[in-house]
Image (cartoon, helix red, strand yellow):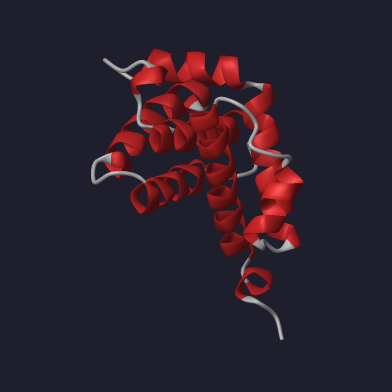
Length: 146
């Protein structure tokens, strides 16, 4: 019998985004890597497709974090990246990485997924904040989709 993540690739990717957020959140709070991503994912009990996608996201964000943070700071009116809530900041980093690095993923999927994760793990305002920042970023990174 297939698990829901095996039957629905979008579900597996959604779970991957959540796993990536959890890892990045933990690293951000500690200001260091909590453990290797593989160890972290094993503790979370994630399926292989979920872990693989999450690891791609984590590596992309970590590798390009300075550039991602600069892009976020440029579009987040009246906000510095350091002042953003930890959940919001890391959801935005993942969304920014996807907008920059995965042209095959539709913009609306990236933004919708980020908003849902922000609503689930952030504050009451997180969803609208993430939506606004990523929409501005979308116009900058993928203007053809406007």
